[in-house]
Length: 313
Length: 275
Image (cartoon, rainbow over all chains, first blue to last red; front, top):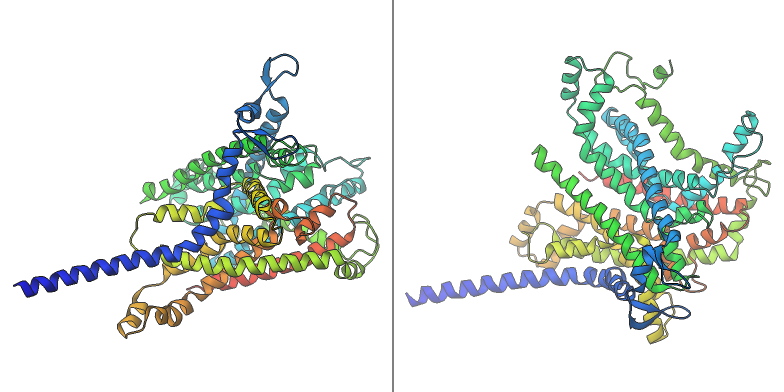
C-alpha cells in the first residue's frame, strides 16, 4: 500500500518536473526574440511616452521637468503676446492632410484593387499563381525606388507630360510633382498590393453558386455585385482598406520624395520636431497621437478579420 | 470589342464569374504597377545626362555607379547590416516559433506573440524616433557610436518577418515524426537537428529571405539610427533625390530592383514547394 503510494507520488513529482522543464525551455527559446524586440523596438516607445510629458531643451533633447505643454501644443497654441488659446492651424492642417491623403489613397486602391483581385480570383488555377506573383513582386521591391519611379513619371519632363505635349493636349507641362496629388498617387502606387492580396483571399472563397442564384432571380450584373458579391467579401474589403490606410497615414518616404518638403504629412512633421524644430516633447506627443490613430484602425481590422470565422462557421 | 482580346482563352459566353469591365481595369492596374519601374530601368541606359530625354543606349551610368566610391561603401554597409540582421533574426525567430507553435496555449503566450509582432503594428516613424531617443541616451552614457545601433534596430524589426513563414511551416508539420524519433531514444537535440530542422528548412529559408529584403529596403528607421558616415544604400539614394537626379540613380535603382526581384522569385518558389 505505502509502496504503491510512494511510486504514485514519485510519478507525480516526475510529471511536475517535466512540466517545469517544458515551461523553462519554452521561455529560454522565447527569451532572445523578446529581449531584442523589447530593447530595440517596443521598449524605447515608453521613453517617448515619458518625453512627451517633459519640457523641451534649448537646442534639442529635454529638460527633466514635468510639463503637459507638448500635449497641449499638438492641436492648440497660445498667442505670443496674450494668452488666447486657438487651434494650431499648422499642425491641424497636417493632421487633416494626412487623414485626407490616406483616405484618398485607400479609396483609389479599392477602386483599382477590387477588380484586379476579382480578376485574379476568377483565373483558372494554373495561371492564378502567375498573376498573384505579379502583384507580389512590387510589394517586396524597395519602396523608395518605387517612389523614385513615380517621381520620374510625374515630373515636368516626365513621361506623362511628354506624352500630353506630343498629343498637344497641354502647351505647358502640368505641375504634378510636389503636390498633394503626387503624394496620393504615390501612396496608391506603393500600397496597392496590400489592398489586392486580402481582397483576393476573400473573393477566392466566394461561393459562386450564390452569384448564380442572384442571376437566376433576374438580378443584373450591377445588382449581383452590389447585393451579393460585395456583402460577401466585406471582411476582405475592411482588411484591405485598413492595411492600406495604416501605412499611408504614417507614411514618411512618399511625402518626403513626392511632396518636396512643403506638403508635409504626420511622419514628416514628427521628423521636423526631432530635427530642425528641436522640440522633442512635441515630436513625442505627435508620435503617440499617430500611434493611437493606428491602434484604432488596427482594432477595427482585428474585429473585421476575426468576425469572419464566427459569421461563416 | 476590347473585351474579346482580354478574355484570355475564355469564351465570350455568359459566365457568372464575369463582371463587365473588371478585366480591363485589372490589366490597366498591372500596367500601372509595372510601367514606372520599366521606365526607370529604360532610362538607366540613357546615353544623355537627363532622365527625361532619350539620347541612345549606353552602359556608362552603370559603369559610373559601380565605380562610385560612396555607392560602393553604402552597398557594403547595407549588405553587412542585412546579413547580420538576417542571421540573428532568423535564428531567434526560429526559436520563438518552436516555443509558440504546436503547444497548448500557455500563460504569457498571447503577450509574447503580441510583442514579437509589435514592430509590424507601430508606424515605422514612431519606432524610428523612439530609437533615436533611446540610442542618444546610450551614446551619451557610453560614448559608443559604431554600427551596433543599426545592427540592433534592423534585427529587431526583421524578427516578425522571419517569424511568420517559419511559424506557418511549423504549424503544418505533424508531431508524429519527432515523437517516433524520441521513441527511438534520440535526444531532444538530435530530434531537432535530424528531424525538425530539415523539415522546417523551407520555412527558415523563406523567413531569412524576407528578413534580408526588409532590412535591405529600410529607409525610415535607418535614417534616424545611422550616425554620420553610416549611410546605407537607400539612405544614399534618398539623399541624392534632393539634388538634380542623373541616370546614375536609375542605374543604382535598377540594380537594386534586380536583386529584390531575384530574391522575391526565389522566395515565391520556396514557399510554393511547401506541401
